[in-house]
Each structure stands twice: as structure tokens, then as C-alpha cells.
Length: 243
Image (cartoon, rainbow, N blue to C red; front, top):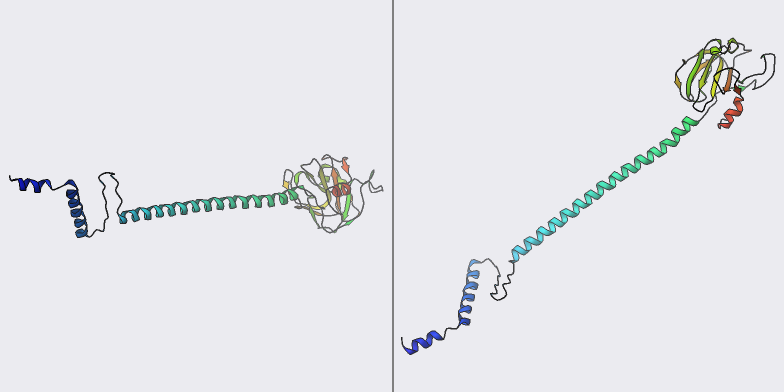
């Protein structure tokens, strides 16, 4: 090998070799038309992602975030709807309970159209001692109503066991310990052991037993038996009933 040949070979530096390789890589990229700008730095090792790949990652992330947001909104709406349903049911129940309580607790007059006649403890030759109840003057066949809900403990003729002076009669036991009695009835529409509601028809008024004319004899008692009556007008008024 001559001296000139050696001199030319020694003139090829590492820098020139690297530049040649870079030029070759850029040329290949331009030929394939991929538009990929990949820069590899052999010193740092850093690599940038292709533009199309980065855009795809961003789109996927945005789609996932949107789906998660929609799912969260749907869950929140479902929870809100459930709470609204529970609240509505609670409001409805609260509105119904006072009305039900009022119905159970209320007392009413035993007849709807009447005129008060003989009063409680009134003296006279019609009674062996004094009058034991309040008379409601009504025509025969008038509907007689349960003054309050309860259980029928007496029903039938002979004063339902209290004697013939009462004629046909009914006695109802109430939850508060009071008893109501209805006498001189033309017809009895309930039986012993039957549960009745406030305002339910239990009989028709009449003129049976020791009676001077059609009317309803009404008593409030502390027991089911005769002799324990209290003033029924005062009792009903204490329950808010106007006579």
C-alpha cells in the first residue's frame, strides 16, 4: 500500500460516518412516506412518539373520561330518583297517618238528624229512679250509628240482657274502656263479637220496650252492665262532639 492511499483512508473520521448514517435514515423515511419524525439520540436514548400515535392515545383518554363522567351522572341521577321516591312515600305516609288517627280517635253522634229529648239523670214516672241516658228523638227506622269503633258485647231483645224496659238493644265496648248502649231499637243489625267502625250502621231506631214514642235511648257506661252509666252528653262533648 502506498503512502497516498493510507492518507486517504485516515481522512475518514467518525463524525463523517455518523452523518452518512443519518442521511441514509432520513432518506429512507422520505421514501416510505410515513411522515414519522423519529429522532434517536444515541447519547441520551430519548425517543419521541409518532404524531399519529400520540393523537390516538389522547382520543382514547378523552373517550374514557367522557364514559366515566356519563356513568357518574347516571349513578347520581339514579340515587336522586331513589331518594325522591323514598321521600314521596314518607310524605304520603305522614299525610295519611294523622287522618287515620283522627278517624280512630273520633266520636260521633249516634244519629244524624235528631232532637234531644229526655236528658241524663232526669226524674219522672217513666223510670224507676232517674233517667240513665240521653234520648234522641227520631222517627222509627232512622239509622243508628256506632258512636265509636269497638266490639259488640251485647245485642238483641230484652235489652240485650239488661231487661225488657230497654226493648231491643246493643252494647259496644270501646278501646278506651268505655261502653256505649243503644236501646228501643226496631231492628238490630250486628251480632255479639262483631267489630264495628265509627259511624257504621248497627241498628234502626224504634219504639220497643218501655218507650213513650219513637226515639233512641243512648248511654255511656263504665261497664257493660246496667247501673254504670255516666252523662253521655258531657262525655261526647269531651270528645269534641257537638250536640
